Length: 328
Ligand SMILES: C[S@@+](CC[C@H](N)C(=O)[O-])C[C@H]1O[C@@H](n2cnc3c(N)ncnc32)[C@H](O)[C@@H]1O
Image: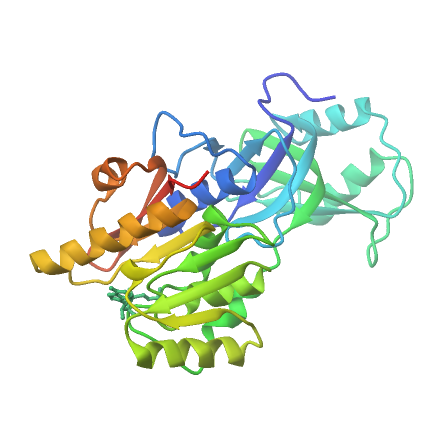
């Protein structure tokens, strides 16, 4: 069924801002279960190609909770141009009831118009379209030199968009979209997650929203109260502890660690290393974000690095380190 030269049967449209594309690559691997470390640990270009950042996978998964994967489709036909893709579709003798065609055009594809593309694709299918309540959605991805026709498997929910509105902000808080991707690196719905430096609870809100049982901890009692306020504002639940994250114990599926900034002194650096070491001991998967490079430290602690994503912000670059912890 699949045209020659196509590596894998499912395609995902990733929609990160340019400064977050490496993290999008890591999240894509986590969602599709591809957690073996690739030869190149930086996430961005991993199996993504083309201006659309189409990523390919062997499996078609639900991307409702994804921060960056906009849509997942099963590939039906492809061609170098519209005619080539339509020829591929006709060969399949597709029969579909209540279908709808949507067009995703990228810069450089001006003609024909989207409505005309929809009409031509619909003509290649036997059955009746339904534009208001379709049972099947077909997606055309059009970019210069490559036209893809896929059947929609799942679409992202984008719930994180509403999470920026909250009673308590924090200058060093993560943006909700980045926090959501970090959660997806280490946990799935039903899992338990620890955030040892939870601040005002950005990670906890995303985790709880996705059905992950989250436990947050912070040394600062004021921000722990604020985290409770932010969770309550979104009608979400997480357990909160006011303590030093280095004193935590337990076993968790995942740990997200957004390390304190300003590691200017030797003591601060030791505290950060202590926090990371504890997280590695407690969790099966860890995601650590910090301004420095923790790769060597993580490896020395017995963690296995799975990927790194750089997140430029103003004049600094933060790095997300994704690793297997020491819990089986
Ligand atoms: C970068 S902020 C985390 C922000 C958080 N991710 C958010 O979005 O609100 C780092 C947090 O670590 C906390 N912290 C610093 N040292 C700590 C320690 N030893 N144990 C627990 N929390 C600590 C700080 O109080 C601060 O809230």
